[in-house]
Length: 361
Image (cartoon, helix red, strand yellow):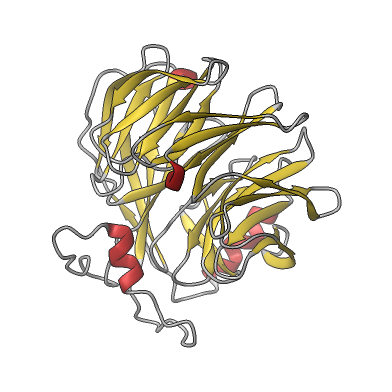
């Protein structure tokens, strides 16, 4: 019923972009089982690398996904939702980007001033849908502005994509491949994730130091939780009843109680924290500290801290389910470190050919 209401709402709006159907050129070998695949968006390489988690090798690549940074997978494993940081003029090609400038920096350069709303003909971006069984980019839809991160709802009906330059999040009806609505959040929304029951969408507003809570019945912000300075990546663990968010501006992490919807404690993480995840057993938190060239582990019960040096500049990280390792990408080098979290040491390197962003398994 909820999806039907949103479809009707979409039809009543005449200014949303139309759906574009495309076909990609397939690359790589025959896909392995989904549980052993790690999909790594490669930013300006405009492709998604596929890593086999058993062998720690790149086994394929999905081309045709421009400036892909944010990535999510539907719960059934059938679709990837890929957000682009590239800007596109409505009805036209992307604005010319100077050589040597990343898509993120180019998008930031074209950001709207904080005191002026975006014009109706402002640049847009495109979200791509990739069928995992054959790695085909089957559809692309227009959304209002560059996309940073992506989340898929637990029922597989909706995707949320953050638009830092628009102070908004687009909600996409996955079955209809259409934008259902656009939610105005706080300033510069960065990361997004749904609650386990799908009733809430959490969004980190890096521009005003809040976590926005969106009610998915009406797609409205119902509450804001004040956290640290410039909150960005976060992870939700319903089994622990907590949300953990990196505060980039002050080198801390806020631990938010999902029951009280308030900060229960603050942890020191190290300079410029970025990637974040929790161990499969829920006992240990992992954070990549770009400014310190380290990955830090924190025992959530005792507070014990351990660290391993990863240089230069560890970036996104992902606990690889069922394999006892963590993948950590680098901002500067085209590789990912394979880290043994128990020993806190590097056990291997994966040459991915570029900068890895929001990984999904």
